[in-house]
Image (tube, rainbow, N blue to C red; front, side, top):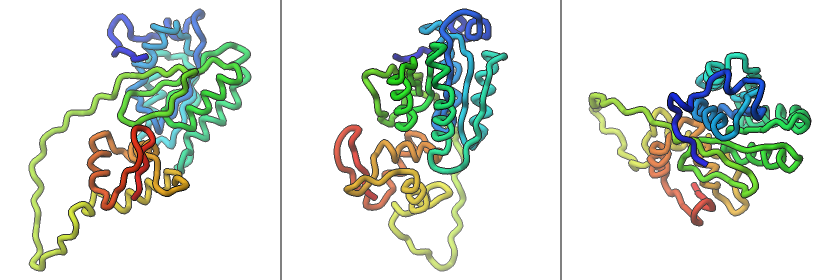
Amino acid sequence: MTAAPPDERTAPNANQLAGATGTPVALYVDADNQSPQCAKELLSLLRADFDARLVSATIAGNNHGQQVDNWRDELVSAVPDLAVHPLNAPHRKQGADVALLLALGADLDGHIRDRVLLVIVSRDDLVIGAAEQAKARGCRALIAYADGDIPTARNALLTTLLLPALVKPIAVAQPPPVVLHTAAPASAGHPTTQAHGEEGVASVLAKVRGMCKQKPGGGYSSTDVGQALSKLGYDKAARARFLASVPGLKRQGTGPNVTLKF
């Protein structure tokens, strides 16, 4: 299901989302995985298709770039009296996921008892798996995330709300950099091993390896690699350029089963 961008007729407001009637909804947001730009489209979709009454929002993340704060501000601007529970996770792999799952586990029995609709905002496999388990326990649950190029694990029994793809800012043309050459020529090196932005390819690959689980036969899932690069701040075009710059990169498999070896 794809949400249309909100307009004057569909923009959410406090009376519609926090009124006394409607479907009670509890949001669990992985702020390290989904941008707060998704908030307004998500709320509009919940109001239009689920007659939502937003009762709480749990937002987890390491708050890099104030993503937790930005998510809270976006939600509270639409629902001023919303109960928001920010969780500042440690700066380690899947720290936000673990914090979010612990909070969900503590609240799950209450959601089942009160027939609250659980909406998990993330495209991480671990968090999606938690939504599947919550639904198996008898909780009404679905997931939501912005459209993108990274394949995501899906379950035929779990409803997915596909939000509009994020609008990339228009790049402003900059004057070309001035290159200063020393008297002694530097080693040319292979062009694919030159620095990628401020970090060398090797440095970025080391971070990616630390964020991904290696497959038994070697290599890493293309989905995991894409998500890792996304968390490091690479958009779709930047991920493609970076992978093209990796020396000796090998691809095996097709579709969502592609394995990258580097």
